Image (cartoon, rainbow, N blue to C red; front, side, top):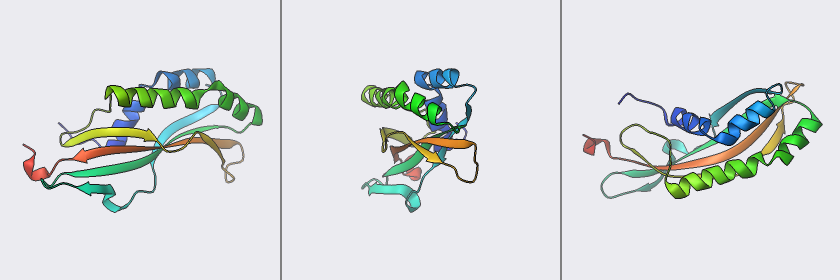
Length: 148
């Protein structure tokens, strides 16, 4: 299997969220783009070391949408229930153990939402605002000497 960054696998996974398609369709004239960006992570992101050399790691990232700046649009998105639907989708997938497809040696453990959806005023771009949800992906990385 070819190397694929975990954040790229996460983007492909989130693209499968049916509520994202609905949001993009509903606000297609106002959504400029959406993307994932890695958040502040500790060096190496290791939360636990195991005797066999495997490690449990954490990747924090943000799901962000750039939108036309408008108070009406802000209220409309908040009232659309997108955050609650997205949260349910993530939680349901966690319970069913439906995770991103990852490269060999990376075993998904969980995906969690760390924040509710919130808006950020991008002062350097006067006609754009950012809607953001912060998430955390926990995974186990196998000790590479054991990977065959």
